[in-house]
Image (tube, rainbow, N blue to C red; front, side):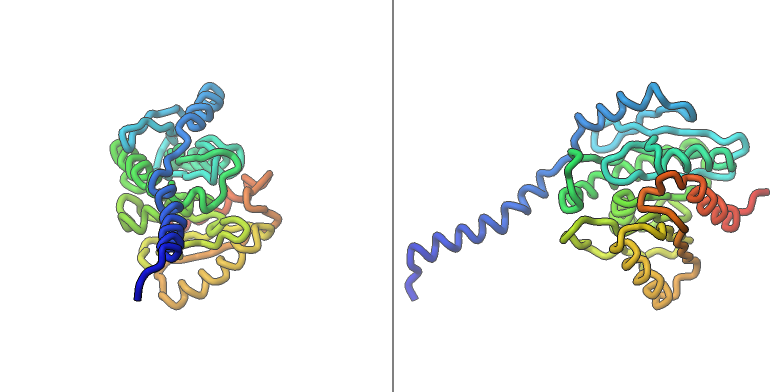
Length: 267
């Protein structure tokens, strides 16, 4: 059968349309200029903790380290999409409140894009988050923290799960996921969370007014974890809380701090 010229044209067009998004994803990088702007906005306003410079992929990124008076371990906190390590909702209540409860806390700047970026825009950045998470965990070990809990909200949870896909549970002893599974309209998750690979304790939190997709996936996770017979998984739906726990930081802190107290009782 002879190939007609017009058929070759359509074949090349189809290949180009298929390869174009893959090429764009491969070239995707964080918006480093926006990260710098976020840093400039928050560093001088930090009231609790100290800014620290961490490095991954040959670049410096911001962390905020807050020391407790009598630490029983440390927590690493990952913010949601497009925010920063002193974000007023979720991050600041946890990083300051848990320090007051006896945990050294480190919150870090995750890769960001422009403000209008959606879930599918961020998927290629998950790879860039992995070395940052690893560098942050190594920093906490270097400070003498023998016990480390990884806490991740929303897009930060997607990035934490990419870390688990690539490195397993290396470097942390327990995991708290908050508002897990958030995406965007007509942008379903491309990969399921690798929770079946995790054996360490997991706390799965979301708000009663969270996004419908988050609540639907939370219900599925409960059944999955039962099927996998996870040894130490718990899930809680916190009342009157939206995805960002707006004005509900104390409620979130009580849930996380209470779970940590039960998991690692204070001496």
